[in-house]
Image (cartoon, rainbow, N blue to C red; front, side, top):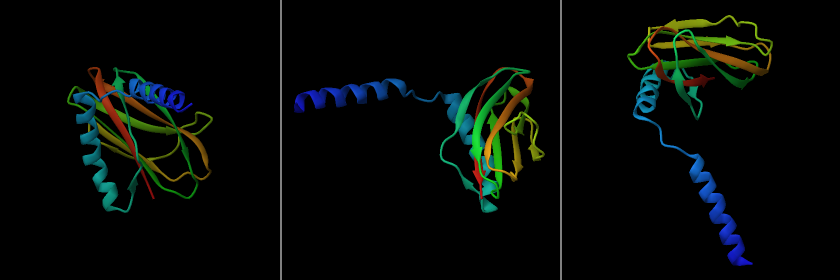
Length: 144
């Protein structure tokens, strides 16, 4: 019986390990850049949420990320890319796909959108590459 448990445990660990991949150098660089950007929000009392999203984005494409948010909190969604991007955007939509009014920061290859939801629920964060070449991005969010 112990050997079966050990084999099953080994298979689970192998399966988990097989699905984990190392981040690319571009993903690590984009993550570093977005953390530099979010430092300003940390100074204002915002906490960085554990985890981040990375991927590749092409010109005139948008990547949507679903997040669950709580009324009464303040949020900042921040993204950064490498120098291949000339201009990116971060926008937020409610569960019905309607744009949410946000404060916006944009510095070409870095952008943020901040707001306080009036109701708890699912929201969608859209990252767009408005100008530039296909590139790697990293998106994080802060809250308080």
